[in-house]
Length: 116
Image 1: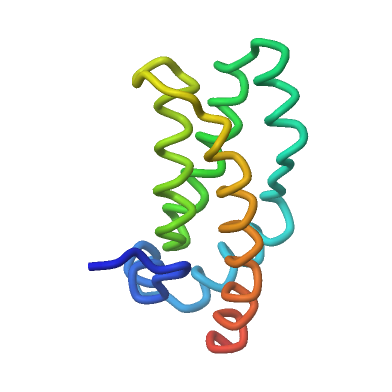
Image 2: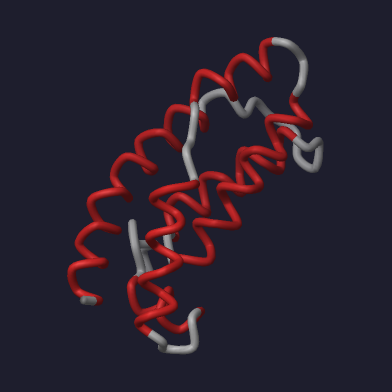
């Protein structure tokens, strides 16, 4: 099954099917979880792959919690490389994460309307 930008059902399930909790988690994500591509790329350029991996890990966890499947998957791939768990170059994933993050925002806004 293809991963979704936002799997609403999965997100609700993670929140025990409680729409109030899901609404709150989405709201917090929109307020607090900012992704800064330039910051990640700068960390990588400075040889701080582990630090970049930690930043990506945080975003991955937040994405998993709300049901942002595609973002979670892209973050997981980049994180494995950045944290040395897998060989490869993480830099192609960084712009992809940005696109997926940007695609997620309107989906979260729609979900908030659905939860009202």
